[in-house]
Length: 385
Image (tube, rainbow, N blue to C red; front, side, top):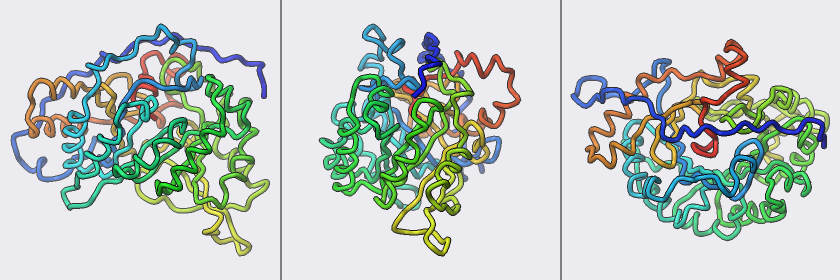
């Protein structure tokens, strides 16, 4: 593990109250209200990620560095957070506009008190075709062992666990609160036992910090039914001091894996999928169903914005159209101002219709100052990954 390049931490500029002006809502009928909305690049709305808290019990340097998110950091007051009833109200309108999958995020979502009650309310929603939603959650796993069964009983279907290494020293360094990796592994086991699956494990790879853990992680999860995904270290937010030389391209991750494992590429499950999938190969060079698969998420070196169908709702009701956005749209004001369901749906439709976000595709053509000094971008801990 190299300590030659200590992380640069940039003070955070609070953008939580900064919002785009709301576009005129389309609520007056016509053909546009009889079809599902498409954005300016022809992308439908299929995936909604909802942040339920801006708090976390880890201080990972790439997300919530301790130098910024310290004991004096001012988190949002409880009154600013959307209530469960408000979240369900918004989610219902998104589902009516085409959303089929809801992912709960944070911060660390398991810190939100009584989260199972929210999951139970979301689980009864149905698409216009009468289909249940795909409801999932991303967690650091610290509280998963004690909560897995209750989450499953409430209607949660799957979990994704963030785990950046198996070496306990590396893991404690990356979470920066001295939390042991063994407790996260217990959480994953509890989630499997509860039937929360298929489980995905996400590893953010930082060159020189934990990239030596790639093969160990693959060995550990191969054949377990758990899908391991390697994520390029992204320039999200303003506080992590991101540097391109700390990015290990996914192509090199695959090359490292192929020094020990035979891999065969797999097709994407659906349009808008973020991960490139690889199966472990059997002796005949075919996908080995028992060994399973891995994925790589290449948002820096191989942008996948072209078919991105995700929207993000912050914990205080700001709607963001891109992980790299600087401002959202204030849906909370609509909710608390007495907007009807029709008004809310019309506003969401109008917001999505003017969307043209594609930051990762444009990154290479942007001025270096825009990439190196991302002070205008919102924090990952605020809108979820």
